[in-house]
Length: 63
Image (cartoon, rainbow, N blue to C red; front, side):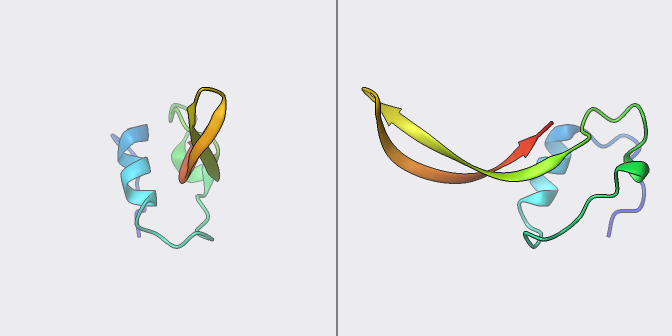
């Protein structure tokens, strides 16, 4: 469990979240006001070719 987010970048958080269960919650209060990420959601995105969906991917949406 990470208890301190000082010095943690958004990319660090993405790498960490790739390996945790889907229902893991991130306590926004722990992130602090200066942390660039305030919301993390699982999302689906697609590869496109000539206007057609080619392949579906699961990812993480960071706001």
